[in-house]
Length: 412
Image (cartoon, rainbow, N blue to C red):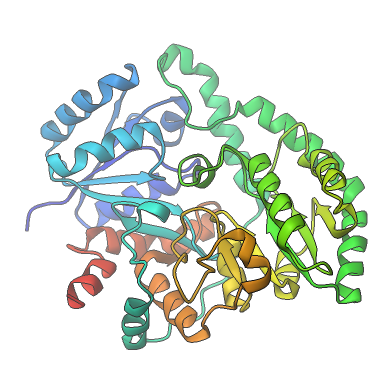
């Protein structure tokens, strides 16, 4: 059998890619890494590595020459929306490369995603409910996942270390431009400011959400996402969450039942300096719905989702949480669960009154298929979380075809 030769591109800011490479080498594969910035170098080093230091337009020719020199068979990357990865993905078919994409889990918190060719909007997962009903029926039940603790400070420390190394980019990688729509020092300052603000808002948010829940008031939930999330920037028609909030508020004011409320829950990692809360309250006042809308910085999402009349999202794991709880969901962006029988496929204006719960049988089989084919029990940060998923991830990478490809071929 021809030796598998993996070319790793950018990974997550943790030791995950380096440890995964070690697991692949122990199984007989060769691994080479491309470093695009000093953060990449800090987490990988010079061992079996090349360094891309030219402007982005030079990447296709440079990468083609590297693949041909190394006789690479597989491409491994984290996230399929970064500019350096999009350039590589465009080349992959012509170069005969298998593509493997790692991402945060479709289900949280004990899973991460590993798919071929792409994730989320680019996933090979079908959008046909009939396929899930048939395929999921034949698959066995999955055992409960191994639980582990994921400490935010571990993730934060890795992120700080990665970006601290990036201070030297002008010397080592002068043409590198980050894919993130933010500057790390400003983001960290925003986090500190948010931490201070949460100390003031936590008690208020808890009292407000408890009041709504105890009153039994019907309400819909809008969980916010991050402006720089690729699900917003590349896989939706919105430029940012301010546009989402505006559209949802106007639709809610005009079409939601008069006794219904709307609960807007901010993302826990939102670092913006100007909160959307003041803007939201001003818009609610103008629409005459200030008494029907509340804005929360904190709150237990599982409790809120379980009590909501429905959930409005772009493409968030809150959507799968709501579907599992049997709550109506509308996805305004591209989501793997956006299909008849799971999410509401009509317009937002109709969702407030016509949204229906997901088909429980379809959801159970959808979840089973997605778990079997794309999810790995493990984490991207923390020694134990990484170690848990390494073996399974390496085995999937080395398989001639993915689990999903096998199921798709069997159904033809």
